Length: 194
Image (tube, rainbow, N blue to C red; front, side, top):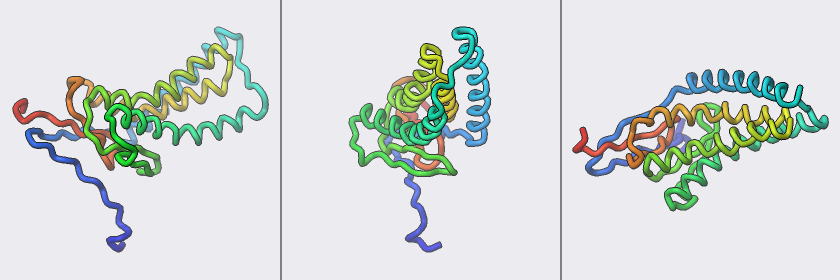
């Protein structure tokens, strides 16, 4: 392959007075957790619909097609939510965001270090907006499709949850940098703490 066709991978920025620690997750583990969570949510969701409504509504015949289209659009929106939340939290511009495909999945990367607090908010925002909110609304509307949509996007966010779990013991103000080519991040520790 010629050099002009090779994908360049952004390096991790060094910061004077800090050492870096890699916190990435395995895609296989994330996918297994996502499938288990999705299965459990579907079972719990169906049980909840039966408990509240005595069953669930499929609605009109087009709802299945809308679910498929909505899921496809939702995957892109999931990454946009990451990007725009991080962009807002760091007061950085769109030029700091990068979107693409990585190992068969879409991703968003921001090239700005931020506090763990801001990183976590951006990492979990798609879980809340595309997963938890639709899942809970489905019980008020008796919509099987909305419940499945929410369950799917809670499952899709399990990689993000695992990344947040990997940095759970860090203080809220610890500097974090979204990893440019792996699912995860880099944590900056002051040299004096090592």
